[in-house]
Image (cartoon, rainbow, N blue to C red):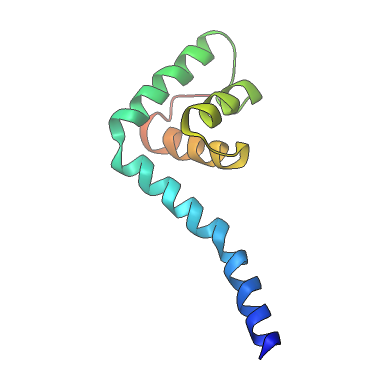
Length: 88
């Protein structure tokens, strides 16, 4: 019985990042105004010669959305892909 519970625990932890990524995508889809505001911030960064994928931009998103750096980067990619493909 214990090995089965252990395997279920491992499997559930393995899927957690997949579910969190799905939630990030849904939050971008449900909040287009927020996403457009973030696009404007990315454009501001671009005008300063800073890429939206730079550490500074990811840290900004991470702080604003209270996300880990990895999730902030994923969130940024979703925002750019859905709302502002002109961003670099």
